[in-house]
Length: 409
Image (cartoon, rainbow, N blue to C red; front, side, top):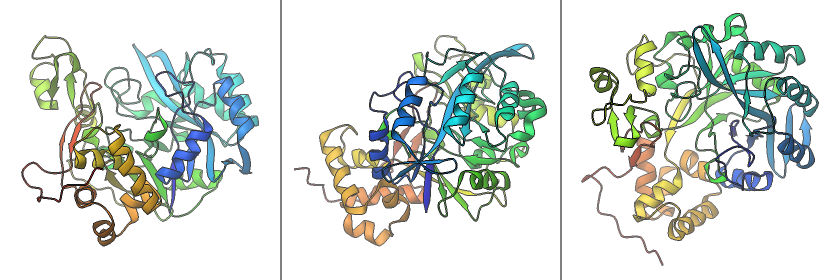
């Protein structure tokens, strides 16, 4: 397996850890089991300078730091007025070389201050950006980011579009991949036939090193830059095996709701309430499932034939914290996490590849039960809403076996 996480952020993006530098990213990629990372934020001049100093070219479009490969990527925020509304769309740009990145930044700097944020804020229509990038190099490609989230996304309820053609006009054919985002997975996207031709990728959108790989893309083997383009265009499931996904209910915009009043609403509930909070009357944030049910034309459970598959996971540290009944940032949880990484090699190797018998034999009993419950989907989730992550219970209430208490010390 060859695992890639194309969309993360650097220390130069807002609300991002100061530890998001190349050294920490490479170290954590090893811990997580990620083979290739997107560089993120190549539009920011200071971060780009660091990338040029610390990455070695491995081949066309692929760079290396220590044992981790990197691809030049950057998320941008396109904010503009179109068809009667202000639109706010996040897009991920992929580029094959630093020379081409310099040309990209020269073009984008005409539409925003690239120093202001690692995620560049641009007064530039998405379609015009794609056209401008195409003039620089045919090997640049764009992937709309977290396409269903209410804020800053292609189909978002607050400022998105009702079709991909509305957004990209006559360059829609230049878009061949979409990012699912934490609050959706391929099964959710398969409910809308208009998306059938697109490859669906999943990335962590990490703002701290420990979050990389929480969503990722699993390929059969290492690929080149141009090969990735072909894989995405053709949806080659022999090479693109599956995506690693949050359980989408855990995403912080899965259902509708109003965070200030702790109001979590299923789509049918908010519709019956005319999209207002039942406690204060304010307008609720319309979540992913509401938009999917509005735009989609298939029933829940539809599986798209010929598409790469997916696996829903819960991060290992969350399973450990739940097993120990402690916080995920506590020393107790972190110590157990490090012991398991040392034993199994990486987080994703443990969660995805390790045989069940080995997990049962080599992991503390309750942690083993939690990992296997996640694999089998035997868990309970309270859906996320309006910026609040969902809550996952990997030990179904009242149904888990009595496990031997873990020795914490």
